[in-house]
Amino acid sequence: MKGKSTRELTGSEKTEAVRDERPPVSSAAHLQMGEGPPLEMGPTSEREQSGHPARQIGPYSIIAEIGRGGMGVVYQARDVRLGRYVAMKFLSPQLSHSEEAKARLLAEARAASTLDHAGICTVYDIGESEEGVYIAMAYYEGQALDAILERGPLTSQRQLISDISHEMRSPLARVNATLGVARQRLGQDVVFDRIERDTDRLNEMVGRLLTLARLDMTAASPEMSRIALDALVSEVVADVQFEAEERDCRVEFACEQNCYIEANPALVRSAVEDIIRNAIRYTVSGTAVEVRLECRQGSNGHHAVLRVSDRGPGVPQAELANIFRPFYRVGQARDRKSGGVGLGLAIAERVARVHGGSVQAENRPGGGLEVVLTLAAAKTAMPVQT
Ligand SMILES: Nc1ncnc2c1ncn2[C@@H]1O[C@H](COP(=O)(O)OP(=O)(O)OP(=O)(O)O)[C@@H](O)[C@H]1O
Ligand SMILES: [Mg+2]
Image 1 (tube, rainbow, N blue to C red):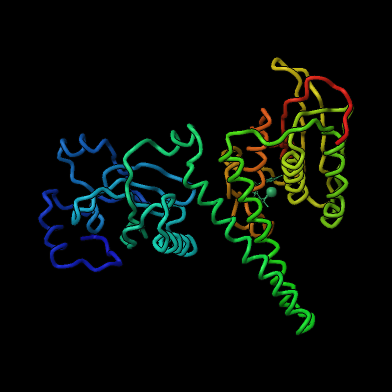
Image 2: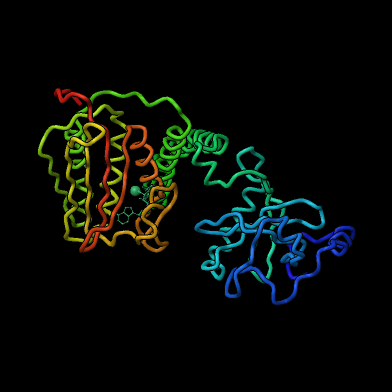
């Protein structure tokens, strides 16, 4: 057998594996995890009928690729010892030599194996083969994840995120309170500052996760009122000026007319703030972040269109759509420096959606990113209080 499972096979398991009627794999046949020819994948029955040898990794016969993401490639396989289908996740080819990615994959498997929740896939095994580290997990018959996601959120997973975030709130509050006591008793110390920074960050992250989960799980639209978007954006711009100065850039706001929308002010504010703060974070020192707001008459009625442009590195064309996915961040090095979690734009995208709008990003000619947030405008343009 080629693979080395971290779990030793029992005597009867070994006999079962040998007794499997599939012919053994030739040494030339291997998964495309690094170099090597691509896996030739077809539907299970087709492959079995054609008598093609299944690729064997330890006790697992690889059947077909069933999905691929930023970090890994997932295959349907059959555990020949136990006679059941499994899903096997390998690191994607570009990460297969990264020790850090390998450690993350194993940490993911270990964390999942300690939890028992309907929203988490059961982990059966972890191991290492010539094709790299793998996790063998429960295989669920059904549609592709993309198709399921298109129909709506995975309620149990969202519920899990919401439950975990909620549960984290109280211990975090206790850490903050204890920190206050420690400062009083032991005096100021740089270590306390560091703990405080990290707990603040965790708190913010938990808050964002809760917002994201709520936006995904609640079918009812959030409480809406009539707001002057121009005033709201102007307040956000004033609030971020200090941050902009610290990063040696400026934020310029232009709006030619009043712009009223029917919206949830807290949600819209958080979306606008994240988009502008991203621009401040990435724009090159000495440049301006331009914020422009227009109220437009389109084929579907009035729209408020907010454009936030910077003079930063932009986003590689192929990744533009991905930046609205939760936890997606472009380029490890840049993001470590920026310190973001990768939730801001995912929330902004959902906020736009619950307001009958959308958000898009485009690279600007001459460099930089332009993010366009479109929201449905209120039907009449009467002035109101924000
Ligand atoms: N103006 C921008 N210029 C270049 N890259 C950007 C810009 N805005 C967002 N990105 C990329 O998109 C990713 C996702 O952005 P998002 O706002 O969701 O997360 P974040 O800013 O990293 O973290 P968070 O908003 O949760 O603090 C960023 O990590 C960054 O890689
Ligand atoms: Mg952000």
